[in-house]
Amino acid sequence: MNTKIYEYWFLRNEDIPYSRKSRLLEHFYDSYNIYRASDKELLESGLMEPTKVESFIADRNKFDLEREYDDFNHSPFSFITMESDKYPQKLRNIYDPPYGLFYNGTLPDFNKCISIVGARRCSAYGRKMAQELGNRLAKAGFTIISGMARGVDAYGHKGCLEAAGKTVAVLGSGCDVIYPAENRLLYEEIAKSGAILSEYQMGATPLPMNFPRRNRIVSALSDIVIVVEAREKSGSLITADFALEQGKEIFVVPGRVGDNLSTGCNKLISQGAEILWSIDQFMSDLSELYGHDISPKEQVAKAKKPKLSNELGKVYELFDLYPKSLSQVVEETNIDYLQLLSNVLALERMGLLCEAFKNNYIKC
Image (cartoon, rainbow, N blue to C red; front, side, top):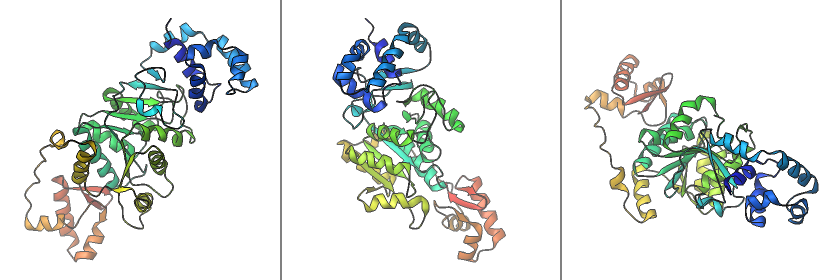
């Protein structure tokens, strides 16, 4: 008997709430027994209302096991459930564990995983930090977990992919629904090197209520959660709350007081989260947390910065990772605007400064 057919049927079933499937499995032991259960047995379990039992039985009788399972096997997608030994161990003991996951790609072993989460409308600083963290951690052998949202999530994935690392995106929609649509290429790259996964049904739309729920999976699959920029009311803070409940380490990139994108991060720090004040120091901290030196695996020769003239060097030092306008620099230094513009454009051509938005520059 191919028990995977019954796992697929139970995973596909929409009569039973997501939060109740694992409890039914615990009561009946496996999906085959749930499939074969009588209406009386289902009612006596105390996990299904009489009206739900009726529709459950009716839908079960209409479900063509062989055909549905065969159709799915001819798609590019896969699934895994709690009935499999390959189901991520990190998910088994959390509150409200998902019965199963649909996925596209190849599931990693989830042994060394760090999540990078943060603001969708992130700053140039947040983008740079997320991308560099994803890159450095991937080179050190970590799998990056995030939600493929705009902003910090996407840049964390991209940094990992640039280092040819493994990354996993947990979606708030069906794993065949690309959201946001602008991340189509990112979706395809993630599926090649890691996995796109979701507990939601194939074709499920990205409803607002889905995202807080999916965040418990992001934190559960991770050993450490890194928050890079978060507003006071942010989905990233929900991920951090789940991480605290699950006993995970939380590191936060600090931000400027009064900056909306820093309010959530600074609040987490005030509540006891670790401060990620240096990427090099963070990599060193990881060596202690994991009980072995990870630095040799992630050391990469840094590109030498071009030698700068005294004048260019002074202009370069006027900028940092927060966008600064040319007019602000002129006010601070009394430097001639045209001379400043000429030097800034020269530094931009060298790859040392980037225009975050019109006439506002940051160090690259």
